Length: 93
Image (cartoon, rainbow, N blue to C red):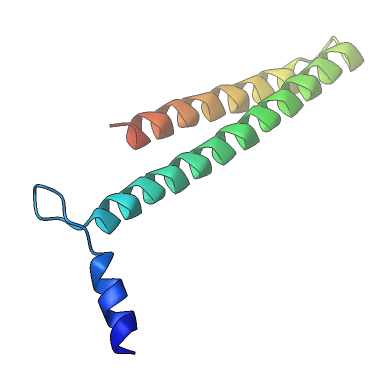
Protein backbone atom coordinates (compact mmCIF):
# COMPACT_ATOMS: atom_id res chain seq x y z
CA UNK A 1 0.00 0.00 0.00
CA UNK A 2 2.80 2.40 0.90
CA UNK A 3 4.62 1.58 -2.33
CA UNK A 4 1.43 2.30 -4.31
CA UNK A 5 1.13 5.73 -2.70
CA UNK A 6 4.74 6.50 -3.56
CA UNK A 7 4.23 5.51 -7.19
CA UNK A 8 1.11 7.67 -7.44
CA UNK A 9 2.99 10.62 -5.92
CA UNK A 10 5.63 10.29 -8.62
CA UNK A 11 2.96 10.74 -11.31
CA UNK A 12 1.96 14.21 -10.08
CA UNK A 13 3.92 16.42 -12.45
CA UNK A 14 3.63 20.19 -12.31
CA UNK A 15 4.23 22.78 -15.00
CA UNK A 16 5.88 26.18 -14.58
CA UNK A 17 2.59 27.77 -13.42
CA UNK A 18 2.08 25.26 -10.62
CA UNK A 19 -0.81 23.42 -12.30
CA UNK A 20 -0.83 19.67 -12.45
CA UNK A 21 -0.25 18.18 -15.87
CA UNK A 22 -3.41 16.10 -15.46
CA UNK A 23 -5.40 19.36 -15.46
CA UNK A 24 -4.07 20.10 -18.94
CA UNK A 25 -5.16 16.65 -20.13
CA UNK A 26 -8.64 17.15 -18.65
CA UNK A 27 -8.99 20.47 -20.48
CA UNK A 28 -7.75 18.90 -23.72
CA UNK A 29 -10.14 15.94 -23.53
CA UNK A 30 -13.10 18.17 -22.64
CA UNK A 31 -12.34 20.25 -25.76
CA UNK A 32 -12.17 17.06 -27.81
CA UNK A 33 -15.55 15.94 -26.49
CA UNK A 34 -17.00 19.37 -27.26
CA UNK A 35 -15.69 19.26 -30.81
CA UNK A 36 -17.02 15.72 -31.29
CA UNK A 37 -20.47 16.83 -30.10
CA UNK A 38 -20.28 19.80 -32.44
CA UNK A 39 -19.27 17.51 -35.30
CA UNK A 40 -22.20 15.22 -34.55
CA UNK A 41 -24.61 18.18 -34.54
CA UNK A 42 -23.09 19.39 -37.83
CA UNK A 43 -23.53 15.97 -39.45
CA UNK A 44 -27.15 15.73 -38.28
CA UNK A 45 -27.96 19.19 -39.61
CA UNK A 46 -26.31 18.39 -42.95
CA UNK A 47 -28.32 15.18 -43.27
CA UNK A 48 -31.51 17.05 -42.40
CA UNK A 49 -30.54 19.72 -44.92
CA UNK A 50 -30.16 17.07 -47.63
CA UNK A 51 -33.50 15.45 -46.75
CA UNK A 52 -35.29 18.80 -46.79
CA UNK A 53 -33.78 19.70 -50.17
CA UNK A 54 -34.88 16.37 -51.64
CA UNK A 55 -38.37 16.87 -50.20
CA UNK A 56 -38.51 20.36 -51.68
CA UNK A 57 -37.53 19.02 -55.11
CA UNK A 58 -40.16 16.31 -54.83
CA UNK A 59 -42.88 18.85 -54.00
CA UNK A 60 -41.83 21.06 -56.92
CA UNK A 61 -41.83 18.16 -59.38
CA UNK A 62 -45.08 16.73 -58.03
CA UNK A 63 -47.16 19.89 -58.08
CA UNK A 64 -45.84 22.87 -60.00
CA UNK A 65 -48.97 24.93 -59.31
CA UNK A 66 -48.46 25.35 -55.55
CA UNK A 67 -44.97 26.05 -54.29
CA UNK A 68 -46.15 26.77 -50.75
CA UNK A 69 -44.64 23.57 -49.32
CA UNK A 70 -41.39 24.11 -51.19
CA UNK A 71 -41.13 27.68 -49.84
CA UNK A 72 -41.89 26.45 -46.32
CA UNK A 73 -39.23 23.74 -46.55
CA UNK A 74 -36.71 26.26 -47.91
CA UNK A 75 -37.47 28.58 -44.99
CA UNK A 76 -36.96 25.76 -42.46
CA UNK A 77 -33.71 24.85 -44.19
CA UNK A 78 -32.43 28.43 -44.01
CA UNK A 79 -33.32 28.58 -40.31
CA UNK A 80 -31.31 25.40 -39.71
CA UNK A 81 -28.29 26.91 -41.44
CA UNK A 82 -28.70 30.09 -39.37
CA UNK A 83 -28.82 28.07 -36.14
CA UNK A 84 -25.72 26.14 -37.21
CA UNK A 85 -23.81 29.37 -37.85
CA UNK A 86 -24.77 30.76 -34.46
CA UNK A 87 -23.81 27.53 -32.68
CA UNK A 88 -20.37 27.42 -34.30
CA UNK A 89 -19.76 31.06 -33.37
CA UNK A 90 -20.76 30.24 -29.78
CA UNK A 91 -18.44 27.23 -29.52
CA UNK A 92 -15.43 28.87 -31.15
CA UNK A 93 -15.48 32.25 -29.36
